[in-house]
Length: 308
Image 1 (spheres, rainbow, N blue to C red):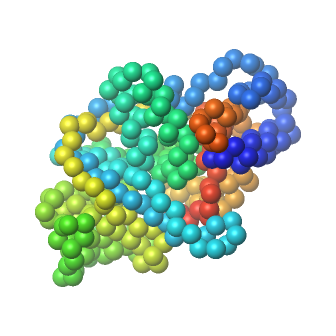
Image 2: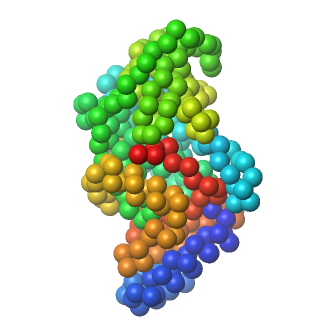
């Protein structure tokens, strides 16, 4: 997030907060409702890690979204994501978050973790959800953010019904077959390979007789493409967050999509207890946290993956 955009976001939030309660600004750093100048912990202080399974493979995917910029012209956003695969479960999320969490969970030195954190904070196109596939058994567990709320919900693992076709193609060096499905209001086509007999894939797309190498929706808006695949010994870790609350999946999707349409208008100023503004993230980047949740204002129009 550029600093001018960062400060604009912070000012808008502060205006909303002051309409409901007294707020004291303590330098460029921390703002707390009630005027406390105690140092505000960054999000990592609320995290812990649970080892789920030994790692077996890692697949790095490019997630692309064809959208429009503030001027209305077409633009494509590119995210770097990663699928960590074990025998029985998998984890999908942002690549920068994976680097931070892997270092923290392995007990790396503080300087290495801090460097990874700074990279994660300033990642412009950041894939927010952390998705655990088939964990617990038979379920998909999603940790996601809507506005300033970190939430967790579950749904059936590989809940989409796939229609297999006879169509084949060579993608990323693998012989793939095509399958189609409808999920969360969108029609999807996926290309999978039985050369890697894993039921997992990017995002929530799973349940085919081989790893999903590429997937896109029928409108050509969202797509996932495997760009590298490798064996690994890094374990699949669950990131625990003490802020997260359990929610109903359908209610959360509706709330998150409302936030995508009106980001600032979807944050209730009365719910804000603290705001932290950091300008020292690196280069001309900074970051804003509200109630401990980093607020990532979109560079371009947000188009949700899930419509329902």
